[in-house]
Length: 233
Length: 366
Image (cartoon, each protein chain N blue to C red):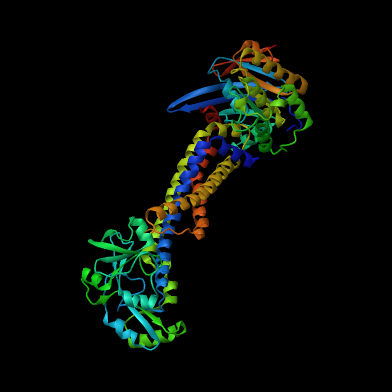
C-alpha cells in the first residue's frame, strides 16, 4: 500500500501500557519515546517481559495504548478505535511471527492470496514486483504446498512473503528466527537485510539474539518497559 | 477467496465436519421421519378407506369424521335399512377395535356383504374367514408379525388362526368375523360405521341429500369428502404432534449447531487471530463463520434427507403395517430452512465471540 511515506514513519511519545490481570495491574510500557525513519532496519532486544512485544503490538495496531501518542505511517494509532487499528493492519503494517502463523489449511499461494484479499488487492496474478520478492525468498516453487509440507525455514519465508504481498510501509518481525535452526535463521536474517537494502522496506525486528540484532541498522535495548539504550550497528 | 477459505476450513478437519453435518442432520431426519410417519399414517388410512370401493359412509350420531374409529356405537339394523334406500346397491357394517399401541385396528366384517360391496380380497396365501377363531391379515401386518397362513397370532388377548394373507390397501390390516368382534368388545349387534355402494357414483350427492334428510342426526360423508379430510392438519392430535416435533427439531438443531460452531470457533482461535493480524475486519471474520455454518447446514440438510430414506427402510422392514413412513419432499425445504436457519443462528454467538477475540490472545492460543 505504498503512498507518500511520512518521516519518521513511526513516532512514539510517552507511550504507556498497563495490563490488568485479575486484580493486579502490570505496567508493560513505562514512557517509551521512539522515532523510526522510513527504510530503517531496527532491532529491538531485551529480556522477556521487557515490553518489546507490547511495543510491537501497539505499533502494529493489535492493542491500544493506555497513554501516550503513537503515529504510524502518519496515522495517530493512539486515538483510533478497533476499526482504525484493523485498517492499520490491513494497509500499513504487516507481521512476521516466531511461530510463522500461516493458515494451516491453505497452500502458501492461498495464504498470500488471503492477505491480498483482506487488503482489497487483486489476488492473482501476482505483480512482477512481488514475483521478484518470491524469487528473492526462494519459494516460487513451493507455492502450492501447505505449511505442513514445508520446513520451518520455508514456512517463515512464506510468512515473510505474505507480509510483503500487500506492500506494507512497515514490517514487524517478532522473533522471526526463534523457531529456526541456525542455518535457516541466518538465511532469514539475510533475507530481511536484503529486503531492507533492495526494497527500502522499513523493518522492526524483535530478537533475543545479539548476533541477529546486528543485522539491523540500529539496536534498541529495552528493560522494564523502557528503552535503556540505542546503538547504531 | 472467502469461499476457498470456508471450503478449506471445512475440508481441513474432515472428522469434525462430518460430525457437525451428522449432528445437524439429526433434527432434519427427526422432522422428516416424524412428519413422514404422520403423513404415512394418514395416507395409509385414506388408501385403505378408498380401497373399500364404497360411495358413502354412514356414521353414528354425534360423531365427526375425525372422531375415533373405535368401538361400535351404531345399531346394525341400519345396515339392512340403508340397503333398501333408492340407488343403494350394497351396504356393509364394519366394527373397529384399536389394538394396543393405537396404530392398528382390527376390522370386524360380514364377509359376504363386504365382498359384495367391495369385491373379493386378493389372497396371497390361504382363504377367507370360515370359523370364529379365523383372522385375515394383509401382507404388511403378516410381514410385521412374521406370520403366514396356517400360523397363529394373539390379538386383543385372544389366539387366532391366520387363515389367509391378503393384498393390503383395503379397509384394515386385520379382519375377523363381525359377530366375533362384537362379542369380544361387548357390543353385540352394533357397528362402528356403515359403507354404502350406489348404482352410479354420480348419484352420490343426491343420495347423500336424501339420506341426510331422513337420518337427520347421523353424519353421512361421500368418499370425496373423506379424501379431503384426510390430512395431518385435520387431525388435531397429529397436528399438535407435528408442531411439537417441529419445535423440538428447531431447538435441537439450534443447540447442536451452537455447540458445533462453538467448538469450531475454539479450534480455530489461532486462525482467527492470524486473519485479524492480517487486517481482517469483524464483518469478514463473522462472514466466514456464517458461511461455514451455511455450508454445514446445507450438508446437514442433504444428509438428513438421505437419512430419512434410511429410517423409512427401517420402518418398512420392522413395522410395515403399524408405522408406514411417507417420504415428504414438501418438507425438505422446510427442514432445510430449519437446519440452515438453526446453523446460522447457532453460529451467531460463537461468531460474535470470534470477532471480539483479542488478536494477541488469539495468536497465543495453543
